[in-house]
Image 1 (cartoon, helix red, strand yellow):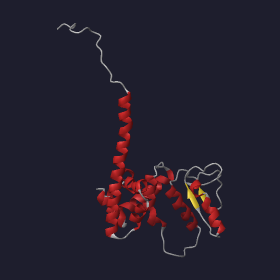
Image 2 (cartoon, rainbow, N blue to C red):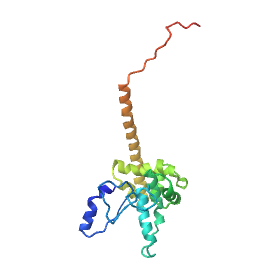
Image 3 (cartoon, rainbow, N blue to C red):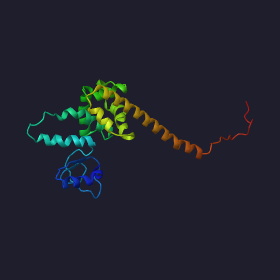
Image 4 (spheres, helix red, strand yellow):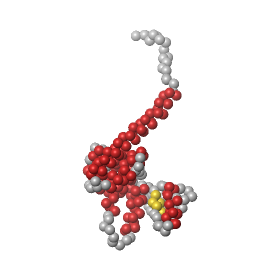
Length: 219
């Protein structure tokens, strides 16, 4: 979120370093973005899609810049990371309409044809066939496992998984994320049981009364 980076632009300016901050949340009051800030929901912003996920903003920013630059420099295609854009967009629970829908549709095709060892390994421990991946697969299978790392320990495990080309490391990280997701699920179940138990303790046991005297009903 923009507010989390409040001290950093000043630090960058003090050492002569240009910085860019992108965000998809509502801009907090009292915070003005510098020239190097990109926030689609700030007042006066003309970008038409206001519900991009954080990864969508991070993808759209260089995409528009590169469209205005000469074709030179390293041979890097932004389309190669559309699988990551789809993962982040669905996992961030933004509305899958407009540009989000388009990004996810293109990203799903990349996932089905992926060459990322990390996705292969994560799909294997999740019993998922990547060639049939859908947004539901991301939302209920891949996304929770990738998010579990940051919820319990460090999100770097998910990053390492999605960037590694090593088969052994991908397998170990996938198993780690799968185990962390199981622990997180169990923790959520235990947490949901506590208020139920308290409610039962606080609520008196209902009693049933009959409007007829005992033995008054004739055969």
